[in-house]
Image 1 (cartoon, rainbow, N blue to C red):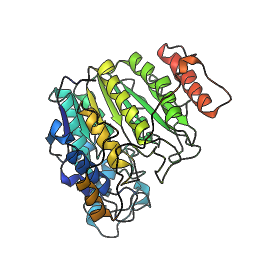
Image 2: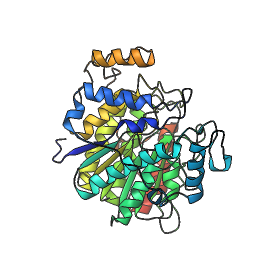
Image 3: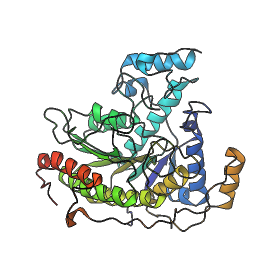
Image 4: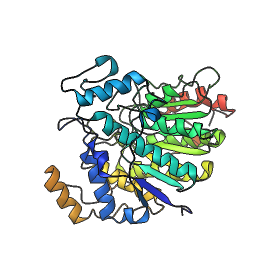
Length: 393
């Protein structure tokens, strides 16, 4: 789709200071490699670059308890400080120096992306370092200290937005964002993820549809392990477009964890770069169809930091810029050399995994003998009637 408005990318090097240490899966190197790949491919020439501000404590406190903010601030200033009740000092969320500042930078970058879109300065805006969707109001969780996406949505609502849709395609359930807006009918949260029967955080089932007065505004597609491009795209197209069209948001917010890839070490899905790219293209189309093009984009999970994350998110940035990359493109030699120098690994040579993503549309009927189709049908059965939609194919 040809974009008619400008795209901004909120990034400066401070965002790589969100760093749990050299042995943690969520290495900030993945963000650095992504931005360098996008630069080498000419993607960043197509967008407006915006520095990341630091969110204030008051902005963070629109979602998070002051007690959490105080604990994070103390943890980043006091060697050896831990607070398990706040999720700090755990294996997932070890403390590190100045962690409040680093986390507030991520929130500030996402807030700026939201501001760019709501003000009309940008049609699309991206914070690739954002998407920290597990953080809860009272505690850090799952590599996420503060929930930047939720803070951004809160600001949109405060600025007068009446309908905001959030679509989360990380392999893990977007539990923090869902919980924060569970009772708010103005916010639709949609999460496609590996079933909580198999994967952290163990939540996000089809019957989880929102609180009193907000029934139907939480949508969960709990997919079987081993789901590949065809199954994932089948599920996406069977659920996401109809619900978004019916909800008619003013802004579409998306979280793009790429840990659904077959090479990701922390989950059990089998998507390719090409399947993920197809999802990004679909979300871009939907932003234009249902939200006038107003699209806020964040990163998320993704722990294959050389083979997957930089390529997936470079595709995402190019799609947000309105100029998708040819999957057959070679990766730039200078970028591959940088990967070898910095990480000591051999970088992929092409922007594709060599797959052609295709799927069978739900309208052709479903097979109740397959786990995938039962999962899709369960979500449609629970949610579609709450939106006045027919759950049957």
